[in-house]
Image (cartoon, rainbow, N blue to C red; front, side, top):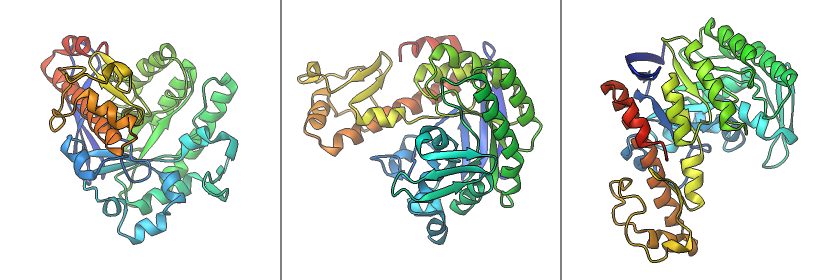
Amino acid sequence: MSVRYELIATCPHTGARRGRLHTPHGVIETPCFMPVGTQATVKTLTPADVRAMGYGLILSNTYHLALRPGEDRVERLGGLHKFMGWDGAILTDSGGYQAMSLSSMRTIDDSGVAFRSHLDGSLLHMSPERSIQIQGKLGVDISMSLDVCPPYPCTRDEAAEAMRLTHAWAPKNLGAAREGQAVFGIVQGGVHEDLRRESAAFFSEMPFAGLAIGGVSVGEPTEMQYPVVKLVAPLLPKEKARYLMGVGHPQDIVHAVSCGVDMFDCVLPTRMARHHCLYTLQGRVNIGAAKYADVTEPVDPDSVFPGLEWVTPAYLRHLFQAKEPLGARLATLHNLSFYARLMQEARSAIETGTWPEFATRYQRA
């Protein structure tokens, strides 16, 4: 199999797992966070920037790349890795999230999802087969199966129907894969324990390279997200990577790792950076606030990262006030450095049995 998971250690205090994800473009130490590069770029950064922070796996998006520049063009140009100059691994979302987030522009039936392009209104039909074929042409390391992600709130019947379609599409996703193309399945079921158990059991019996927990970052409050993650993660096969899609906040990641999740992605560190916000051990800071206009000391002395020691709160605030692009770039470097350290310290805590101290360190982040 082109992608496989290797379990190295289990936390003595929790269900947290320390492992390695073997991919065609390198070995990824887990638990890991994937910076989001929806349109073949992690916004404001170069591939070298992302590599320098220690990341070896990023996420791109099937729906967006199929619309622009198009999977055929990317394939002609040598595949997504060459196209964007990234030598690490790439995972692509299938378009299932857009089926939820662009609900006003799409219809769903047993054959797949019909979208109206957000760019020009043209029709795009995304069947399970086409989603996997597009990802195959992009040449990515991990392809996500097309699923139906029910929004929150939704009725139990709506969650059950989303799960039914997701299950019906699962073998179609697998059947469309190229030889050697690694595909992950996605467990659905909303906030309903019986549906989640049914979906976890269904996917555990199928030959996917890894499994994801979907539908837990679609607007539900944290107190409803946590029980789902705690329930589902231990139900998934120990020998496969477990991926929690779209999560998230540092404390949510710490909780999910403690439940046995290995992989994460979220737009928060990059998106919030472009909206003046920095992640620190003391919580999220709005660096655009007037109180930072004359501050030259770090807002969190324990969250100063290599290459950014010279950046003062006053200067960063000035860049945002002046609408200089450098502000977003520096904030993005800070936030992704914070997330990289979070994951590295999580891995270390699992290996050394110091999880309680680690969890305490990040309890305000």
